[in-house]
Image (tube, rainbow, N blue to C red; front, side):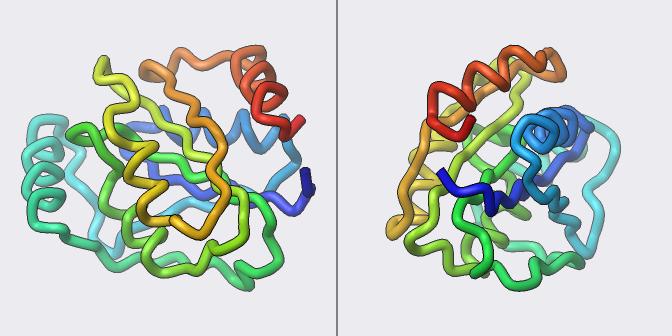
Length: 158
């Protein structure tokens, strides 16, 4: 497995960011946060309703952050909170904006009890010309170093 690793993530509450940083520590990859032009509301119920509407409408928010030279990466970790059993709209924007053909794509998610939902299937659909590695799904901010290390070994990244 190549060491040209990019760790792309969107985090609303900080849980996905925490997981992304653990992956960065374990892999030495480049951390990259997806930042939508218009920030999501901080209030949980408000963001849940907005996310539901955006997902149903297929909305793709503009991002303020851009990955420079995606071609230099062989493995792209893609992190998202589980929003209505799927990826957050900023993650969908990223996956539809970059060509990840021929790359290893590794999804990871955080959730509040909904598990991984349809996240793996959605990422696979949006990255059909990529090699998909097994998803890591973590409840809230409960992830541990050993959990990440074990998963990375299982998927052959470490």
